[in-house]
Length: 341
Image 1 (cartoon, one colour):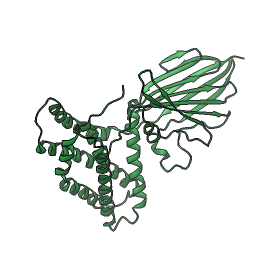
Image 2: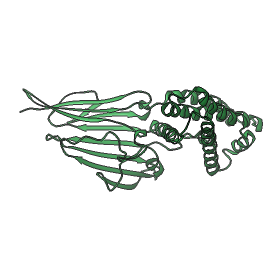
Image 3: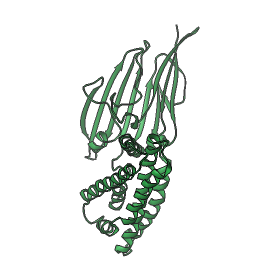
Image 4: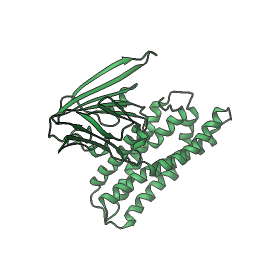
């Protein structure tokens, strides 16, 4: 079952910039032909169309993919958004390593899965080696900070659900926890972007950024945030949450760029902004993938010799794993088959 967020959790996610997208069922069937051609059939389902459109990049219609969008109703009466894509790739053509369009500025931020098919001739026949390698998604650094902040927010929420009286002072305390985490998260992205684009700049240029973010933390309007938190669970505050998130993003970004402009050693902030936006987007996608469920089936020609899948059904090998398996680790899919002479 997909992870559900309480109103308090929703606000926490919004303030700290975490994605609010739900889980997706991602099923892919890859059919390998004896002549080396490959057919990819992708099926993605979710209850909210935004889950499909705003998370990890999926194939776009009008290009090399045949794309269809439908809606189906579950036995329980729920509407499920259904995304289907199909592509046939002739023998000898490189297989896709992601679903982004070429030239997409954020292509590197999306899920990466280099895929190869190697055909080898031996004395007893033709061997087909299929490999797909899901690249690790960086998560642990921010995930640890998120867990620490979440522990405090969860205690607060638990006390509230048990009927304990909560005043603005208590709500202000949890607001401070959330903002501290949000600042640490933004600073992590900014630091990565700074090191990539200004590797030889003296460290005091970076410390100016740190000081600017620390000033935001100290001067944040915690009374306002406490008032919003106190209404969580009473009203639908989604629009307010979105406004708070947009305001936080704008304020922190402006503060970072202004701090960099103040340094005589930083002459161009454009490259920094692009990498900063990249790291933010990449982490949003990583969080979204954490709730997804993957099922990859690879159908091979001939007789399957060996594989590292979860199960085998006829001439196909199937792997199933949650998106969280991609956090900071590589996931390798391998299967080899033989077509006898």
